[in-house]
Length: 213
Image (cartoon, rainbow, N blue to C red; front, side, top):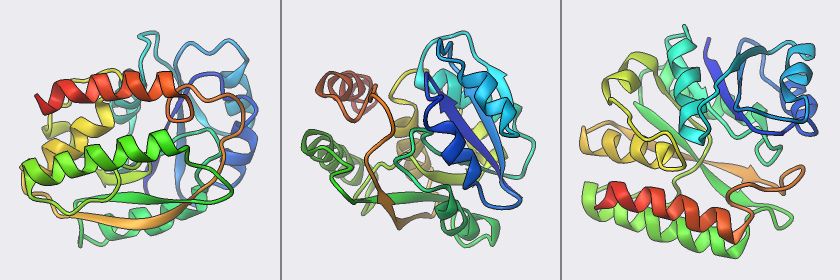
């Protein structure tokens, strides 16, 4: 069954709910990225494997989790409570069954869970990927699944916010079979560091712009 990489920076408030809803057989790997709120201890107390990544950056945490995973299929998911871990089964199954190479959870906002500025930025990025790689994506979503060995072969280099985008772009250009599955996207628990803030969205867009260029 899959390993689930959960990059974490100060998500102590969301971790109990996220880890408590993890599907049976899906092993959570929490990669703590220098949290100061006791996130690592909370994760460990709820049964997660906990790693520490001192290099700051979303991509650094994700890649550390990928390198440390030992399952054939690896999932990634934000750990802020905006996504329901139960939906990992829908996202992971096509990869497990060999009918898709990279599955993305296409977000559907519920209860105002996806700010307008973030939706607009994501729509623009999706269109750019489609133009470059000939895909038909509608979301560069944070919930995803792929085979570990194949991901390592992509030689992902970004260690900041562009990591997820680089993964999708390189996979598409390599001819991977990409699939989207709609997943609910609710308001996060606690203060946003990326998609919920305009400043975070601008930073993410700047990192992603480097890969488009």
